Amino acid sequence: MCMKDYYDIVSNIISNDRFKELKNDTHHSTNKYDHLIRVSKLSYKLAKLTKSDVESTTRAGVLHDFFYGDRKASIQNSYLNHPYTSANNAKEVFNISDFESDIIKTHMFHHTLFRSVVPFINPSEKVKIKEGKPKSKEAWIVCLSDLIVSAYEGLRYNVATKTSLYAIFLFNIITR
Ligand SMILES: [Fe+2]
Ligand SMILES: [Fe+2]
Image (tube, rainbow, N blue to C red; front, side, top):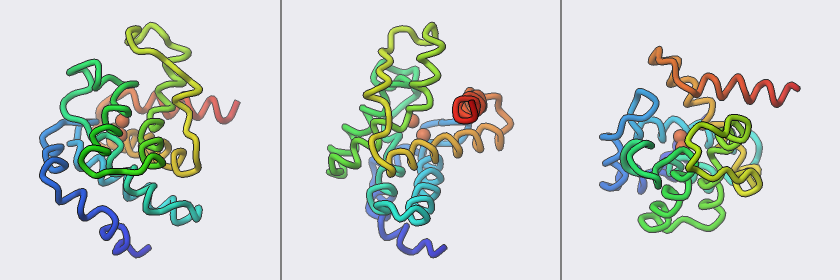
């Protein structure tokens, strides 16, 4: 698959200084910048395969974790809140569309489901299943891409992260 279009879509984002700061943030045992590139590449490929909105899916994929610091650093960075923080940052810096913003806001749906059955983890976060559910094919693509890449990164760096549990949990839900 030709990746020229991919770089045409993301070049203004990945060359931006505020985006490049994400190289300093550890994320799934890699850095956030590399994680976002991986997720956006997979999102781009899946969007092409499924004849979805390639540009919006790729832009949302590369900006879905556009927040600074660790997820434990503040309540705005938490597992369920960082999608909103990322969408706000992406709007401010790259003027993303409302459609792209909605894709970013629902990328943690797997965690929303997980939290709905394990409510004692981070009880201060509010779990809203209806609000957290992806609203478009493009949003499902970014959510799925993030899950796959996160599991890959966790396994690749031989770290027992929660992402493996998420994948197993989601697999059980889908195949039930
Ligand atoms: Fe995320
Ligand atoms: Fe992510």
